[in-house]
Image 1 (cartoon, chains in turn cyan, purple):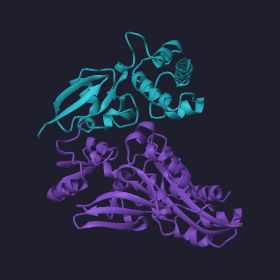
Image 2 (cartoon, helix red, strand yellow):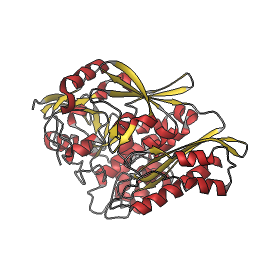
Image 3 (cartoon, chains in turn yellow, purple):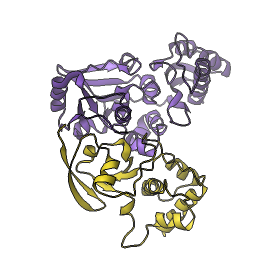
Image 4 (cartoon, one colour):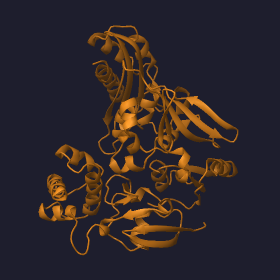
Length: 157
Length: 284
């Protein structure tokens, strides 16, 4: 099948690649661009480990074709820290022990990033609702919620 | 899980998409947000040779008000419907239904038109679209046509949409101030899909039910209007007893689905209980 050339901007950097139309966005980000922070978890749009933002909208990159992202601005977990300083959400996960094995963490943080962009001062319920598309099998979510609360406070600073 | 190979087109105009669809016939599938089609392709339950991605056609996106109706482009996402002031003010049932779908990431990408065209028996939108008696605008090689929601859903993943047609917009009449809508859903805990979803649009005259529309999804192979419930309650006093008696008719004439998540008897019971609760909420 004919390949297609796509142009993307990922974490501020422009990329141009020729891809097979059936390539999923998460595989493009990991295997073609080489950013392996976005994880392939369930592959069925449930676990959220592959969450990235596409034009400001958090999406599950296992349920999007790379060709659908032609022309898009994409942010992955690697795009959050600036000049070696952790993003406040990353810092919150560090400070509040928001992870154990860490597999779900990139997706959790990207979903939290979307949540705080839309609702800078969420209640605990709103945080849990905002993260319902992300599964963690280690910590039981309590510390994740606290990490997001830490970040919300810090970002309103 | 990776989809089978396909040829990919991303037309930027509706006419172009329609010609591609005509050219490729049943080899082609239309891609909107992709949150029904891509999972199906990853499981190889669908292996279309051609994908026509309509995501770049701007005219299919957006929400506007015209002649006491909301006109919603087929590519409008669940999140846009959940968060738009115009929807929250004019037809809050649509915003409420949108908020019950999947999760944040799914709502950011999935579209109203895509969900309706896919016609998953456990999708949320059909219940609300049926209860609101929406009109679905469809474009095809011979031009535009409109079909009532009640005539659109025909069976398991089956709709009135022809192979060479594209659903372009959904028209919803704005209910008057005496009319209230509600959507109540029993989530299947793992997937978030509806084991039962009931949308009710109810108009009161004092304590009497002047009119009521009940759309039910998740229960049968196709979503449906619970006409037995509607005729039982219309004109009746909105007492707890009358509401409960009407809700008993929620699965009259319907063959309930049975799967690993819910037996037929359980689904029938859920439909009755959620119908009663949804009517109570709309009548309160």
